[in-house]
Picture (tube, rainbow, N blue to C red):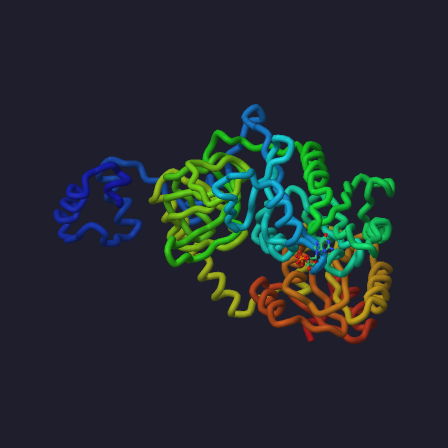
Length: 473
Ligand code: GDP
């Protein structure tokens, strides 16, 4: 490898070592000082680099404004369980499959594209905010627009509120799909009114959030919903440069018995081509084939297009970012570096380095932030409101408690990922975290604090806010 980098013949390098009385064969390891000496002997200039330099330049290409072209919007559907997220995703897809297309066979690869008025829209095929936040927690901002599905016979429910908070935390605009309007007991107006309380103001209520009444099962107004998405995306002026190496995000990945590691990625910029060498999270590979959402092989994937990639060495994780790199050596180097880093991190975590309220405050203070973000879960709505009220009064000029999300019920994995992305601490009042949430918080180093007396809770937060929190009890 050293010979290769110096563009010298390996045999010459080996001969050089022999003259020094050292017998080496290709693949043997030498230390950095020896390598430097050899390189100098061969008349090369050595630049020592830090290990992390292997990542330098990745995700760093700056596009010129004139190279940017319009790209389709990427949409995620969120909302309360049973409000019709899956039905809506299926209905939109079915209604827009071009007839005769590959026998109408569709593949579930984690995302799909449909056409409306000659324009393309990309849907992330995993409904709910769990996938959405899992991705965000890994630093991937894949979604441009969130469709908030609210069933007109059930109106605003706890996960509706969670979804709103997730979308807001991500700064993603919401379009409200008021679903199940075919039902006799449907009350769309009630939905609009209740959304007001959560600061989602639809147009008829004097706001600027688009809303569409739909029925997923009766396929009513689906085109109107798609038009609303196009309208919203026009406002967003979504752009990317298709004429460069591709970058994007992993939506799903798995180990397939027949096909090896398969990852569905969403290209965010550039055009991904077969033969490209990519790094995705800790993994790398040469793109052997690209498969679209209809199961067809394609040669390339432009911005906002989801495709399955075949040819990776191992499956990356959902939410990992990927980028095309110049050669295999670089790809391998980056993935080896990342894998080692991941191992080291997990060792460090096991050693019990967890973020505490105190550490959070110190970080907040040093970052100059004036808000103390909190997620509050409680047994009943009444106590949550009491806590929220008390915390609001605590603020002073320097720091203010900000409740990112609150709700009744156990602390879930979704709360933990929201905490991770918003930098919040989690407070449980008379509720506990479920197993998944405990594992997730452990892994992410997020502190969960439990209380059953409001006074204690408020006291601790007050102390944390004044930087005087006593050590964890
Ligand atoms: P999800 O949990 O949000 O993904 O909800 P599903 O898509 O699984 O839908 C939950 C239930 O509501 C299913 O029984 C659907 O058939 C039903 N459903 C969904 N959309 C509609 C609709 O527009 N009208 C009626 N009447 N039922 C619907």
